[in-house]
Image (cartoon, rainbow, N blue to C red):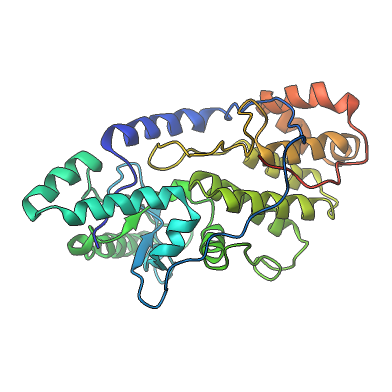
Length: 341
């Protein structure tokens, strides 16, 4: 098996430019209220995967050494899945779970079918600067200057040792991975076809970290064009949110995350609407969940600390939503689960 970068050169350049622009401003998403008519909260079981005893496995790295914008923070002595070692997943599980991986696997097949003399042509056309090493940043909090040099050398050596096999795995730039826990949830969902574990990892099933975990799983699913996982994460997030009393700091963090919804690494469009509604003008599903929750509890949250006030100052889209919705919001938050179409 060969490897591909997640986009063509032109698509990756456009994606990098868009990401740099989004670093300076929150993403503007549709603001139309979601309707419930003609929708369902059901999440279908993924189709049965092929025989996993004989199917091909795929190696996945959650960073891309061929991406000139990549930055790997390497702490000496650490061993992180997806960085030092790849995730290894059966191909049929990826194909049934993510449109992004379907596209990447198709490129792998295209590359593998070429003669060796033609492969360099495909590499040049399909990827961007394949052999560029990422910028490696040592954690200055973890090491002295001399140790930093060793850490940098360790990371560069780590990448150099893979140059021979750089074409036999899928690499995803780390900026598209909200957390390794979220990526592991994606892999677990690919296996189960219906849900992922969250009651024990992250710790404590009703704690704030688990709410953030569901948000990150949703972000990742949206990026990987994993429709069913998006729906499941939205349902899990909504269910737990209804059981929690949020402080202003956590609420503000969740609102900020709901505005950081990246496009797919390869810049391609999904076959479904990413807001989980056939009406593309409606709000993104998880964004409406958290914003409507905040609007219904604004009196409590604004007395808690300055976190809400700071959020109003930094995010005009959030401020506009609250300005229009808060006067009509009730203390009784929408208990019905989110719906999709």
